[in-house]
Image 1 (cartoon, one colour):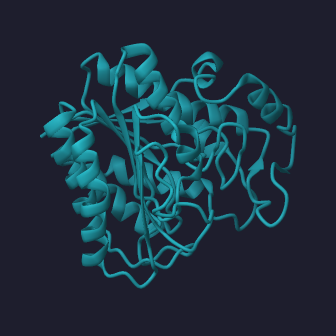
Image 2 (cartoon, one colour):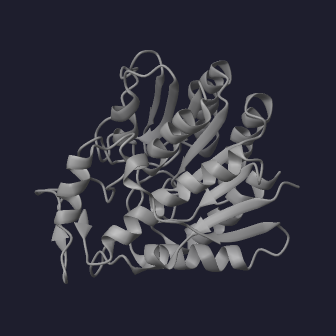
Length: 312
């Protein structure tokens, strides 16, 4: 059984989005509690470092970061978007949380490529897959998965990195960042129509983008069939050197922000299918990031399933 390293930090818990916001600190608290109570897996829990601007600049220009962090308030909340999506907010602890979330991915890449471990999970918030090159949206500010992919390429000279996204919302940010880059595969299965409204099958980039939009009435078996034929088959052909997962657990039947009806155990099957491809092409190397998932009970159950499959 493969050991798993989990990166997280109390700064990620400290970020406050206000009362009744779905992306709340309790998400991470229940995940960490769940992880600490998994006795049967070899899990090493480590503190995420702060990301450095130079590495983030591989994706996001400094002018964007300067503007973003200049908006961080000394108290209260500041929205970074206009209506109708005014729920991407900054608080006084936001800068540290954002840099820790991204730093978790950077350090995961270092440990992965230096042979410390082959499976890593970044238990962090805020999430990242909606963050575009110069636009924060969908609760996301810096695209953690994208920065990690670019860092792997820049630092370790990797030629092919795959990002697989099973969050119920399309990762418009990740797609925008890599839309014309053949060296990065992006595959996403997501409910459509749903925020952010992108992710049609016709959006193919330069042959590196694979979208699998699904309706809310899709069955569990249909979900896995679509995921297999439209995402996994193509990433298998791509033969990545490392696989990054944007792991959202909001396609669960309990989730309040979507309408897909997966069960907790389905995330074991989804993750296991990704690990099998990593074993064939990537020397088993996988970095996973927490993205969405807004029901606390479902999160607790899904994380156990996800980590169990990562460890296989």
